[in-house]
Amino acid sequence: MYAVIETGGKQYRVAPGDVIRVESMESEPGAQGALERVLAVSPEDGVILTGDKIAQAKVEGTILNHGRGRKVIVFHYKRKKQYKKTQGHRQNYTEIRVDNITV
Image (cartoon, rainbow, N blue to C red):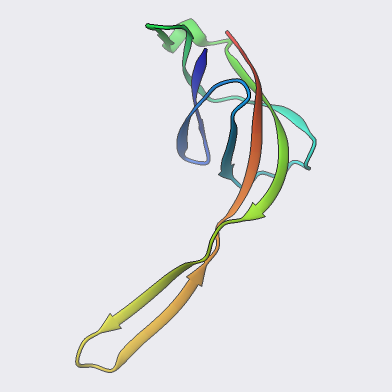
């Protein structure tokens, strides 16, 4: 069984027991909650339910921790003009363990 969910503008394929990193959320570590936006559910192999068939579907999970990703270096450069600019960026994330998928 797996589900396709959307959170933080991205889509994830999750199954019970998976640990995923999503965009930063406000809840505290250890809190349990439901990821509301479920796009598709596959209760068994070869069957995919979408649309009105999964209106009541929920994906429940537990927040494990918050963190920051690896640093990404952004380098701007214009040749022959002596222009160089370096920036760094670290994206915040939240780790969630998927506990249960209900249809």
